[in-house]
Length: 260
Image (cartoon, rainbow, N blue to C red; front, side):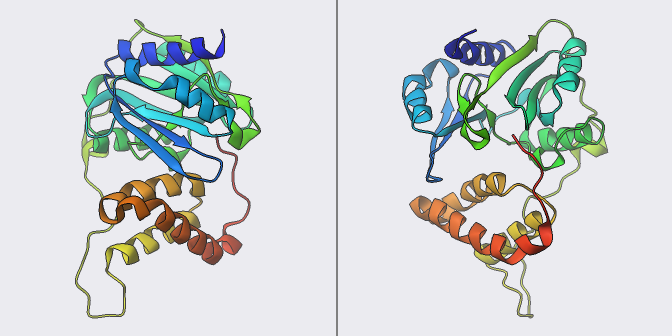
């Protein structure tokens, strides 16, 4: 298949399983993020996206936030494992790079909200060799048919897709449905602990870096979280916060694992 056919194959499969709107993220070479949110797949500005990719921007996509979708993401799977899943369940396998392996978009038997997707992904990541750091429920994946400049400009391609086999049935019990927060709630404290929004974000980012999470993923998450409060300054704030946190935590983190 040609590049545009890989893109169409991915978007057509998403539409077939019920994904009606998506979020497209373009990360330029200077780390600037440009978003197209809650857009129908047929309305995505793909010609513009290809021009951005030609200028070394990376392309990411996810089912649009704020909705329930019958789809969960598994990240960094070996190709053989990813294709085995697609032989057993309805799934889309996207090869992101030789180092990063595959994304698997797994069709579910029921639509899940973001919290349920997160917990389902965490449950699955304990049972297959998927990246546990990519289980937020709103994680971005690579858009097929574009080059991955994080990995030297290799093509991101649809490796396999299946539909009509069977969906995966989420374990909708306390393991999947229990509530926990991405960020700790704001609390009143008489100590010197900074309980402001930026203070909580600082502690959150430092903790995730120390646990081995990928800085690029954390940048996306911090921009998303801070944008309602900081508006157009969110990306500068996120980059500055992340750079300071990296300077603080990097000596103790050791080598970074391979990521897509």
